[in-house]
Image (cartoon, rainbow, N blue to C red; front, side):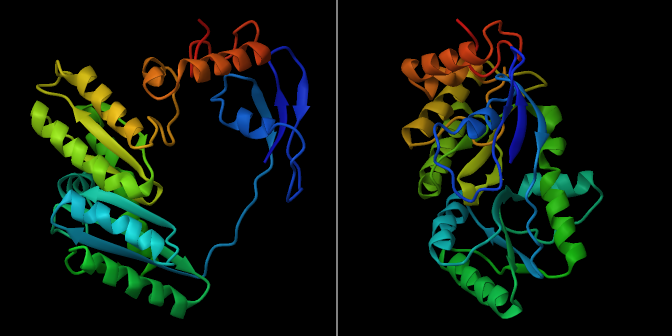
Length: 295
């Protein structure tokens, strides 16, 4: 929880606490946490730690197409299983990431793969979830699943997955942070494929499928941003918003996305955000030109 917050005019706010419930006035704490440093300076926080689950396992399910992999995600989420994460990766890029780390990726088949992390206090419950998820993946067209049980193997899988952006970064114009309801993921992935074909563009995708959050990469051509870059990005954003999504699921707006905000928010929403910025930071001294900017 956020505890101490200093506004640009010098006042100190103390927010949050140990209450389990609090519906007293507007929720300034969450407003400030999501403000990307534009409303003030957080000087003290209190973190809540959760005990680590005793048992864990990581499943890797290969699929022959993007759509087959993605359509399995809502089934898993509706099944009663409670995965810690459902990650979507594509074979070509994940193998590059493994090579970059001088590691070996355990599954070298399919076009797309789901990496599903399960944790539980009971070993029996853990493997019951794993069996149900395997059934649902097979029902959606997956090949044989690989199960990583040893902690060392699970950590290696996560390390390779986490290295994807570092591996791709030299050849990337932009990494998009789009998010839709998980039930809309299949529609979104279809649109990305259609746009890639329309522009002759390579658009690798990976992301947090269990959250509906995908990172689509617009790649450089001959070392430079292609002419269609901005137009293609705009079309992906428009499709995302039309599916009930947003242009940033976790990375934020900052300076890079500020010009795209009008694709996702109404002029009234943007103006309300600017008014909030003016109230907290009338002299515009904190992260000026970030998130909404002051017109």
